[in-house]
Length: 264
Image 1: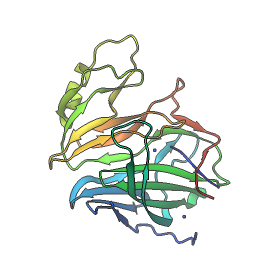
Image 2: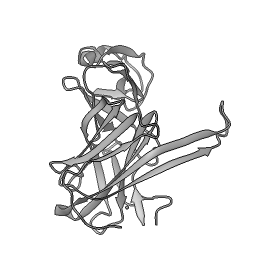
Image 3: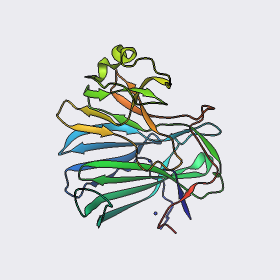
């Protein structure tokens, strides 16, 4: 049984830095995944131009060792999907669902634990999520923070509102990412329902890169999982996942993970 969090012939062969590369169905987008110094990282290019530089992946755990380092590649699988589905409402009768999928199975030998990262590369974007196989050494954990990075190739124009756990009722600010720290405190007014997360930006976040690409960052399929904000390192132009906490400050508690549909 496979189990997961939401956004395969098991020959045990640890490959510390083997890179796996997939392309979108039209060949324009390219995703590269590797384990570098025991840390999982990925990068994205479009028409051979950088979209995301090497960005770290993982989860910080509050009640045990984190899923951020100490990994090796155990196995991987590449799938291709091309199907259509019919929306209940919309402008078109059918929607095409076409993507290339990479599933990387990682082992953390020091703690005898495993994790899988699933990427789906579409012609117009990328989705990823973390999955956890059923295993003896992992049946309960508290998420302290998600450590997914989006490392941009340089300063970029952004349309943003400040991170707030309670409301999105703010006017958008347009600025360079490097200008966000100086504008942050001016980007919101008092609100009766307001919990500002200093230094974070809400999603969806739209940016325009220096080479003219428009990027939109957002979560999907939130099933018993916190909403996504983004911490900004305005000097290095790195966005990092920042999850909405509960009343006790915890990001999420997993006692029973979800069954992954279609997996044995």
